[in-house]
Image (cartoon, rainbow over all chains, first blue to last red; front, side, top):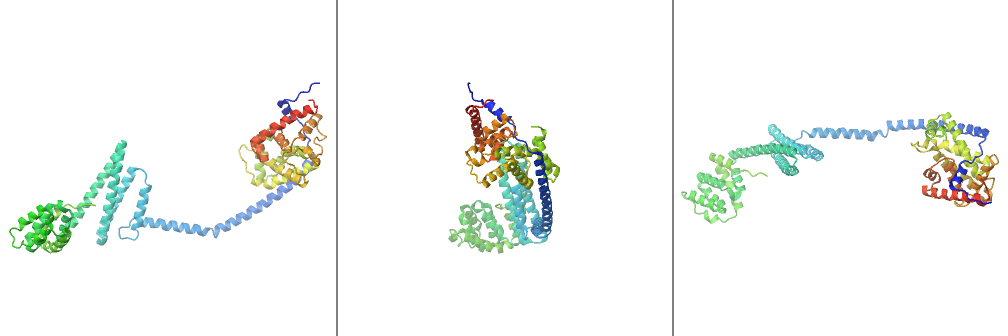
Length: 314
Length: 188
C-alpha cells in the first residue's frame, strides 16, 4: 500500500471539520446562574460606586476646586477692565504703558501688510488725538512726551510702509501697493501737519524766548547760511556788543564771516570779533543763545527769520 | 458562522451587558460558552476542569466588562480568549506543570488525559489525537485560526506574539499534521 502525505489543503480541511465535545446543557445553565448572580453583584457595586463618585464630584465642585476658578474669573475681569481702561490712557497716565503694549501686541497679531499699515496709521492718529487732549486739559508738561510719541509712531510707520510697499511693487501686487500708497500719503500729511504745528510752537516760543530761533539755525550747521546771516543781521541791528559774539559763530563759515564783516563795517566796535573767529563753535553758540535771548526778546523782527529756518525732523 | 456570531451582534450584547442588562449577558454567555468550552476541553481534556476554567474566565470577564472598549471591527472574542488563555496558564501553574513554549503536551505525563474525548466521531478523535501531539502554542494557533476564524494579527493579540510568528508557527503545525498522518498510518 502506497502511503501519501496529506496536502496542505487536506490537512486544513481535516482540522476545520473536526467535531468537538459539546458542553453539557445542565452544566451550562448552572454556570449561567452563577454568572448572573455575580453580574448582579458587580452591577450593584458599580452603581453604588458611581453614586458615591457623583456625590464626591458635587462636593469637590461646590468647595475647594471652585477657588482657582473664582481666582481665574476675577483675574480675567480685572485684566479685561485694565485693558479697556488703558485704551483711553494718555502720556503721563499710569496705564499709558499698558495701552502701548496692547497696541504692540495687536500690531504683532495683525496679519497682512496692508492691515498692519492701516493699523499703524490708526496708532499715529491716536497719538495725535492724545496730544490734543493733553493740550486741552492743560497738561503741557506731557505734551512734549506726546509729541515724541507722534514722531516715533510716524517714523516707524513711514519706514515700514516704504519698505513693504517696495516689496509689494516688486511682487507686482498692485492692489496692496495702492492701499499702502494711500496710507503713506495720509501718514505724510499727518507728519506735515505735525511739523507745522511744532514749528508754529517754536515760533510762538520765540516771541517770548528768541534764543530758540537761533538754536534752530545753528542746528542746521554750516549749510543754513541764510539763517545765520539773518540772525547776525538781527543781532547787529539791535546791539553792537552782540556783533562780536555773532562773528565768532560765523567764523566757521567764510561766507558768513564775510557777511558779518560787511554788516559790521558800519559799526563802531568790531575789533574783537576776528580774534575769536577760530574758537570752538559750540561754546560760541551757547554764548550767542544766552545773549541773543535778551536781544531778540526786544526785537520783533526776528519772527520771519526764525520761521524760515527749516526744522530738522527725527 | 451565522449572524448570531457576527461582530456587530456580539458587540450589541456587550454594550447591553455593560449597561447592566442581564438578558444581554445571558445571551452573550450562551453564545460564547460553547466556543470557550470547545477550546478548553481540547487543552485540559477533562470535562469538570474545563467547566471550572470556563466559569472562572467568564467571572473575570463580568468583573472587567466595564473596562472593555468596543471598537469598530474589533472582535470581543479576542479579548475574551486572552482571559481564557490566562486562566489556562494559571491552571497549568497550579498543577505545577512547567510547559516550555516549544514542548509538546504529550511529553508531559500530567497532561496525558485523553486528547480525544469519547463523545466525538472516530475521524475527529484521530485529528484531535494528532493535534494533541503538537506544542501547546501551535495547538492554540490552529484552534483560533480554524475554529474561531481569527486572523493572524488577532491571534497574535491573544497570544502576545507577533503576527509573523503566528504565521510561521501555523505553517509548521500544518506540516506536522500532514506528516503525522502518514507516519502514523492514518488514512482519511
